[in-house]
Image 1: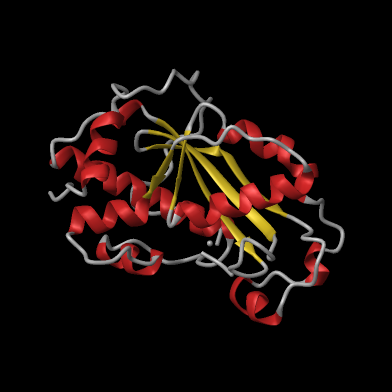
Image 2: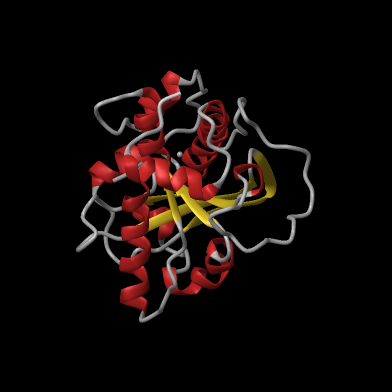
Length: 224
């Protein structure tokens, strides 16, 4: 039901607050150091994208390893159905918490610009995208899905693992602080720190562009 605290990450942490740069067209030749991304995480009522619903999401904008703290979003959503005790025991969100919260259709105008003209980054990102697509379908809304990068797959290839690691496992491999796990914003901040470290590893592996990174991912070839 989860895949998040509110403390800024200690490694690859936020830069000084500032305006977001004007996003450039993302192409195969875009340097990773200039790649505009939105790190995203959501919490849900369960793990089934055919029946469960989103209860919160967090986002953070980055360009390369530079974070923009003022861009961060931490939004609670009314899922329109009871939140099971098991899910609440993990992310702490109860029916009372969401009782007067907006539904997904009401918050989508806030979220959509965050996912436009950026690459969407997440840990096991297919989970989050699946819930975005479910919520959009229920709301009768359309979405031109952005390009995606999965930090779990990046860690697997960079570290030569035989599985896509959990966020806890990945954080341990890079010595990252686990404060704030299992809230949407907390996991977003942790994933952002992880992503920054992964970009450093990519450079060490001789990968400097978005196209080069995607080619290496497709070929399963990314060991430092």
